[in-house]
Length: 433
Image 1 (tube, rainbow, N blue to C red):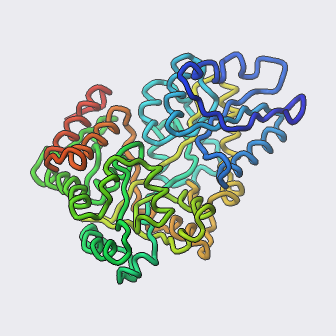
Image 2 (image 1 turned 30 degrees about the horizontal axis):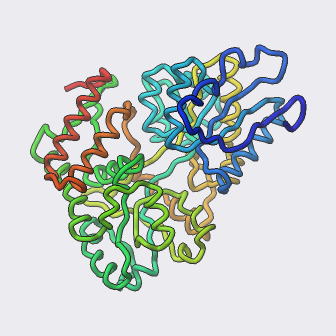
């Protein structure tokens, strides 16, 4: 404790068993009814000790001290965070606020877990200084039900020196360019030209990027909150979806990616690039954190626009602040905390190139800030549709595995995924022809 009145409980809490998932939230009885300061339970997905996490922790400590609050700040591994949230909500013991992924929004909204933030947002003087595409993805029927924490448009991150050794001054602009460059990169450098995450949470995000880059969506808006996957509605759409999975097959068959990438996750992808084992990959601005531990290997890392097939596009990850449907006073005070964290001053002093605000000042001398703050990148970035992805992300991984691990036909993977998306939409009562 910092004093008898104020406490910020800081530290990494990595739960090792499901038995520990209960009793860690913020029960309704802790929302300010006692004589002590109000308690806000904050679950973060930041990596302990990196610059972003330290910045967040310092801001929260200061806010708690200045506002006579008790903020129980806990760190969780991303692989555990969602399950813990769902368990706590089901036990009527939800925290006040958590980090989260945009992919969870539809599921949490349907559960009734999220507070309606519309009135608070409408009275927020900075509300017009956030990207429209970001806020649209966090609303349902005109209701704001989540706030953006940071945005992570996927850019092409590449090792300039490795490309130069292979005889290239610039990165690839298209998928065909990438395939054409791969052999020279491997022959001249001994490293794989490209890296992907074949499994895990990153894999569906990468697949979304490839779909967007071929002019496709995961589900088309049919109006009135209804959606449909339309790949099988005509031959052209199915051909485009098949091309995406053919691209995966070409990456593997032509040696553009390592064979073990088919079963690797985001940890392997990020680490291998940081060690100079991959020449290129599509990734987020957090890769700058790896430069601290691998300064020599990452010295030549650069950021550019991702290669595409028919449409310049990329996936827009929206890391969210989810505020839960607790006591009204608790929701109000939690929104004020989020508003503080999202202020221009605090966003600017953190990682402005990942801010959801439009008024950040980007340092062009910083390669990471310049690359990920590039307006061309942000403008072509697309979020996932505001539907529950809980029943969709696993079939997306399964479809990738059909091609990369099982050697099945790309068209079969496209049809399989199309059917699974529409099946999930029907289960959500979100499907319409």
